[in-house]
Image 1 (cartoon, rainbow, N blue to C red):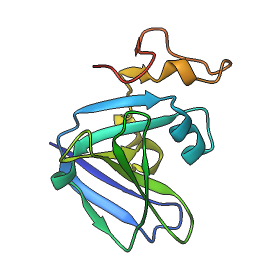
Image 2: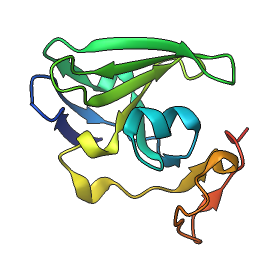
Image 3: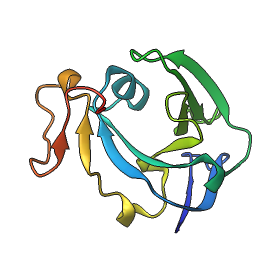
Image 4: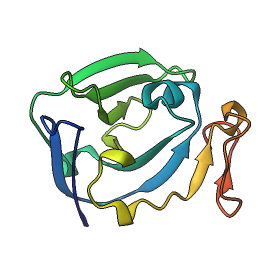
Length: 135
């Protein structure tokens, strides 16, 4: 178990927990590009039961290209997304790597949805890459 803490930009939404980190990925899908305003999102996947959210986060739900329901968890004051849920991974939560205080833990193992990556995005050639979500 790894101690994790983090917050949104204004710190009105925080999280904490001792989590079993399942994976850390760079996602290049259109949704991650739009929600981050960047070329990809870096996600830390942990059991939802390991994380306690503090404050009053807002949510936004939409359907992914997979057909899964995604829930973005964000601060309504500053707009920072801190986490997400995916019906395709019941019981799991994705923490946005930029919201995590323990930056030294952010070591992605793969790039996914590379078929929608912005052409000029540099990628670590040592990481596994997948055109979409690996099966």
